[in-house]
Length: 350
Image: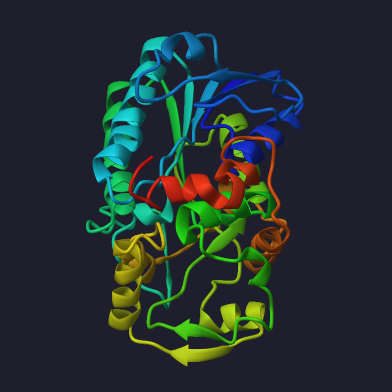
């Protein structure tokens, strides 16, 4: 079985390629990325491609499945840039899959595609996917779900599966995620239990997480299971709230209204101190808790790591400066003294 992975060098991409490479049913993998990595993975060849402009059809011809993972999170100050990469880029991926006659498409959606929902009970894949419209991430994930609906209607011969994972972490992705969301001023070595005195107790702060290796296995199963179709929620237990964060960091809880937390984040974002926009906080506070029973029952997916394991791996990676030999994950991508991050205006420019 020949598989093409679009966006193969990031947090989820590297884990997906590794999971596919370990499967005897997979004979070859083509990993597409904007920048060629130094990483070597069995059965895998790398090719440089950008979903915004590269002719993808030649890369897809002859493939048994395409996995679309590519996503641009920054710059949050330039939403048209992320729209061109994420929405227009995804539409180009889907069109190329259809033109190349690929029999299976697996797409990485997100819990961020869901409309606001409950935190005290889990919702199934039938929950509306209109996103949180104020956040670029929610708008784009929701819009791409509609593009995928159109693709399915126009290409019934193609098997389509969409996975909607929670927040995905691993040790080797810590440098990338710090760059994308916390920015250059976070001292990673100080993010350790006992050194952070308090965690904010914000109403609605409950989210689901999973380890990147478990996400990679979910994508592998969606590729190799010929009956895998439709949407699958992907997340590990437990749901992480303030109590769990306080346990991880050995910190006290400090009550903080959502309005105050948002105002503080907006000030930091506006001043160029952090790249994560306050709209992302709103999205995190409004997304529902997902029911993952369909993926477990029909895909046979079972995470090997708890959500707390995934968070501990991420925090350990922050402290140690962990990474991998790909441009998104390599700590040196930040430049000396994180100079490259500062030169992008911390979320203002690509």
